[in-house]
Length: 335
Image 1 (cartoon, rainbow, N blue to C red):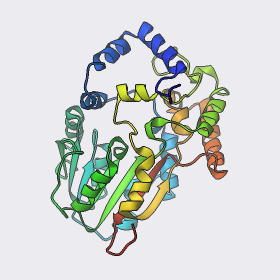
Image 2 (image 1 turned 90 degrees about the horizontal axis):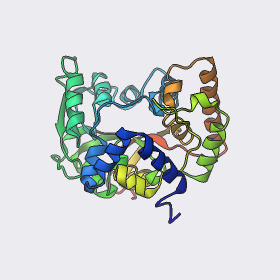
Image 3 (image 1 turned 60 degrees about the horizontal axis):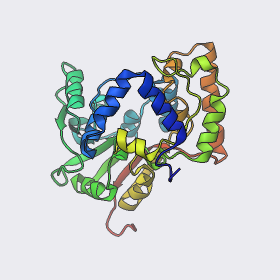
Image 4 (image 1 turned 120 degrees about the horizontal axis):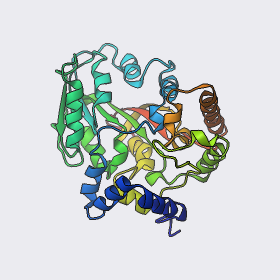
């Protein structure tokens, strides 16, 4: 209702959580008085989370690798390095919205970089990244700093590679930010975006919801309980716009525009989609049942993967996640 600013299913769920979950109630009420920027910072103050998302499932991680590199054992940093930076050494990189630093460590381990600057808005996450890297072979390569990427100015033509690892979908305006990326890249530098590029504000398509909820109805109830609760996931719905603004105003703010804007500003070298239009939604909140699958959960996991593949092949759904490799446009290249 009201262009999905609120919806009835979500209100029922919210009332149940407020009534029975004291920790959730305190967290919700503590956010109501915060400004927009403060809500964004609060949303990313945590450094650990429950294994409740599709990214926590090893079988799905291997699927990403296979769809991107063609090898279930080769993750995207190694794929990019082998294909585009094979003869390079001593590169300088910039990672924007680095979080707790896991991806930056993967890039550092490729052996191609002499230095990686990594920025994030969250002091808690930067502290966690520094701690995780301390006393590792990569510690001297990565400099983690707290900064507001949306307002920070980098020296011109100072980086060989610039990275967004699942962070670009939190930024607006995309054009303004990406023009600053262009200025910070060295001539012929590489811009690598590993991102959610699906519906803005998670306003899922009807095809997505029909596919996800059809599969949810078939999975046994015991594999649909939310992490550390007895609540059962009955259906996936579009989150209300009000909920998105209250929980994290930056979440997927312009995600559906990422690919068109990238194409308008950069030369796109390669796009590797890796699904997610069904699997991301299906396993949200219940992924812990599938992290170490038994015979039954392994069967449902494979059924879900096959269903997503089939729906994409028939054009009913599309890739919501993609690895995009770009270079700056050369003079005379059409916009």
